[in-house]
Length: 162
Image (cartoon, rainbow, N blue to C red; front, side, top):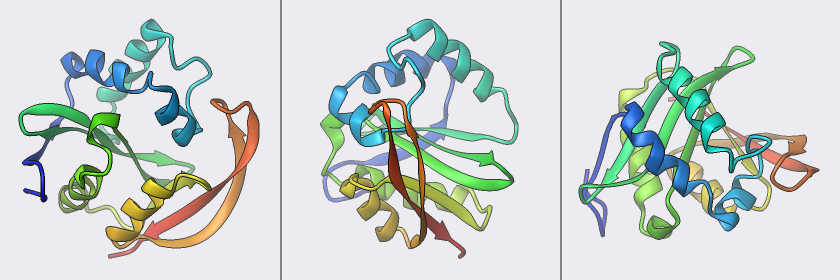
């Protein structure tokens, strides 16, 4: 699908994508907004081992986001405590261009599991807007330890039923 600035495509994530995706999540502002990162998100060996294993899990739908023939991020559905959840990470150079919204809308046509949930840090306004633009409804809040911030923070829970 094309948004107002970029031609957006999704394709299954492959191991060769992981080096690029790892670099995206090194950005301090992006990690702060994501909040709920791994204990050491700068450990490339641990990242590659974890995500290589996740790519082989048939319950996870991992897609790489391509914008104008360039890797722009990733999006995935995974199961946590019996619920389908969505996660995505967009390279900072693509923020504010509609890439996340377009990619999520496209992903939701590929991934039809419903309900599907999204969780977002209370102060990640951009991600909240993406979920809302894609039809997710805020249904509650939770608190959890955010590794990136080294404290417990509130997160908003969003749900999509259609």
